[in-house]
Amino acid sequence: MRLGFAVKVLGAPGLPSHDSRRWQNQPHLSVSLAYLRDIFLYLESRSIHFYRLAGQLAPYLTHPELPAFHRQLDECATELAAVGDLARQQRLRLTLHPGFFVQLNSPEPTLLARSTAELESSAALLDGMGIGPEGVIVVHVGGVHDNREAGRARFVRGWEQLPTNVQARVVLEHDDRRYSLSDALWIHRRTGVPVVFDSLHHRCLNPEQIPSIDGLRLALSTWPRDVRPKIHISSPRTEIRYLRRPDGVRMQAPLLNQHSDFLDPFPIIDLLSQALSLSLRPFDILLEAKAKDVALLRLRSQIERYAPALFLHIG
Image 1 (tube, one colour):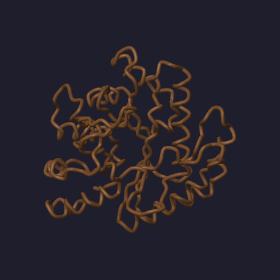
Image 2 (tube, helix red, strand yellow):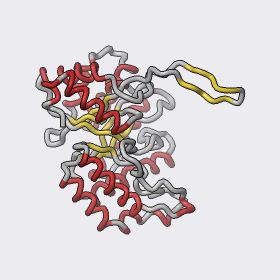
Image 3 (cartoon, helix red, strand yellow):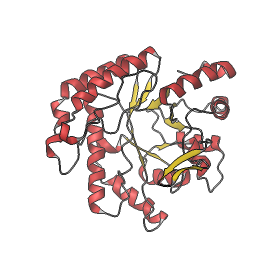
């Protein structure tokens, strides 16, 4: 089981995830790829083999009012291929998770067209790197809008409009407030889109009271046999939140659907141990924690200490 994290590196200074400059300063994919090569070397030094790329790796690539940025993939074809070669040498799995504005179930034609364009460009970026089918693009169902059932049906229609090569990369994550695992499975049965199990989202939104291990099993069964599934694991935030207001700083109780800085190892050990005892198919684990790679390294050491038999299966 490869452990991975998303985007931002905290364990070493000077490793930005992408060129985040504003459009006026001419940011470019070439700069992001130079940053990415440095991140890959850091990941190799820490034996981390799973990483979620920044959604804005190619800045403003699909922005409808900034056509000067639309040719970045062609302009960086050689650099993209070289970075993809480096990822393969390191046995590094790469995935993408575009911004929440990507909504295939949007009733607004303009937003649907923008969402489609963003997914097409994300697939083209992964293709340019020569990334195989494990390089998936994670999306959510989207907004509820008029009602949940209609929203699910619109997602199916939006997915059906995607080019075949994009459909092959798109996977669906259930969420914590709108669309549950059961909703995602409903969509899978009509499209074949694989489902990404998210442990925290399932705890927050699970009206059918499906046990986590059963939810994991159901999600894993939606993936093609030749593509290793990925799941998301996180722990709920329990710390006090400090909110700055015009009248001063106020304390607020934590929101349990938010990610914690570090991960509680024991529920994770329990879930992964159950998966192994049931001989569920192998999968990779994207850890969603605010401490990013630092949280990953800490969790890995805790699994080695508290569950050495499980640690033998962690990569």
